Every structure is written in C-alpha cells, then in structure tokens.
Length: 317
Image (cartoon, rainbow, N blue to C red):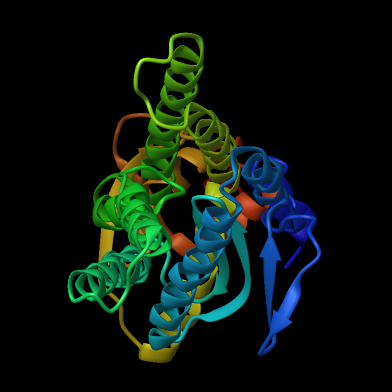
C-alpha cells in the first residue's frame, strides 16, 4: 500500500500520528506508554498532598486497559501498545473490530466494568472491616470515578465507543465519530469553564484544577479522534476485504450516489460489518454504473477524498 497516498486520503495524517512520542516500557512484546500529560499530575499531587491518590489512579487505569486488552484478544485483536492518560487509556490494536456493533461494544465496556467491579469489591471489604482507612475509601472512589467518567457517550471515552458501535451501521463510522468528538469537545470546554468559575468563586466544586485538566485532555483527545477517524476506518475496510475472501460471504448493503459525489462522502457512508455496493446515477438520474466498496477504497487512496465518483466511472471506460 502507498502510505503517502493513504496520508492524503485521510487529511494529511501520517501513521506515526497514531502514536505518541513517549518512552515506552515493554511487557510481553507490548509497549506501555505514559502520556506526557500524566506527568503534569505529579507536581499537582505534591502541591495538594494527593500523590498517593495519583498513584492509585495510575494503577487502576492500567487495570482498566488490561481489561480492554483481554477483551480484544478474545476477538483475535493484537495489541501493539497502550497509552495511559489521567482519565483512562488508549490501546493501539490490530484487528477487525472498529465500528462493529458487538465486538467494539464488548471491548469498550470491559474497562469500566472492571473498575466498577473493583469498586464493589473494595466497598464490600470496607463494610466487612477487612479494609479500613482513608486510602481504602480513596481507592473505591477512584474506581467508581473511572467507571462513571469513561461511560460518558463521547469519544475517545468508552461510552462514546459503545454508542459509535451501535450507530455506525446506520449513520456511518466517520460521521458518528465526528459528531461524538464534537460533543466531547463541548464537554471538555464545559469542564474548563466550570473549573475556572469555581477557582474564581469557590462555592463547592471539588478540585477545580482537576476539572480544568480533564477538560483540556478531552479537547485534545477529541481533536485526535477527529483527525484519525478516516484512517482508522480505512484500515478496517482494507481488512474487511480479507475477511470476505476468507469466509466467502458477507452481509451487504447498497446506496445510490451521483457522479458529482466526492469519494470522501461515499466513504463516510460505508459500514464496518457490511459490504457496500454503490449505484451511480447518470445525467438523467438513470442507473449508469455499480461500484464495489473495494473500488471506492482503492480510488480514494489513489486520488484523495475530494475526487468525484464520476472520475472512477470515466476511468473504467
């Protein structure tokens, strides 16, 4: 595959943009990376006297990501690396699950589910008197917070990935990703506004600096999701052809476009778990040609997302 053309087809994003420039540790062939923004919390923890809480967050975020990895491996996905953020993590995986209703939903739900289970176990042990002290309560709170926060219906959070998996087959993977990313940016902006407001007028919001920090993280993370949406989905579409050839059949769908429709718009309508056939209408709205999804993807990589469907049809004659 020509990756320079792939960059152009996805808005100029290179493959290395999917990874972050951090120094990783390697565990069983998988790199564990700490996002630079995580280190911002260390001086904040020293100043506020909450360094122990931050250490607990780090440990339970790692537990959260391990749950995602185990769920992904049950579907045959291979994990290349994990990046840990203060609010959760992001696993870079190679597999055929993005945008699929069942697979992506289960993988996304695994992280919050494990944190919620850890919260229940910790609370039970506290009620039984096995655990006591402020640290036990803090651990329970961290797990409940990680589970609840990650269930917000925005990407890159797990709740947004579940919503995307359910809606991608109806509205298209790229379109749903962009809407959820846009919504996430508004949530991030709201967090920053609340944090700044309660810094200026302290009337009860706990830890306003944390809300500001989370808002900034969400704004950045949602921007990254917007940029890489087409590249992630394009990789999934390329793998789908391999699945079709291996299984010999796949559910299909079809839709109709005009010759003047950009290839990027067509791609936004494609589904991760159905093979698409695209009917092309002529100047008098008569059916003129039928394109396969494979032809559209190949042309998009070759020509870029702004090229028109009519250019493919004309090129085949």
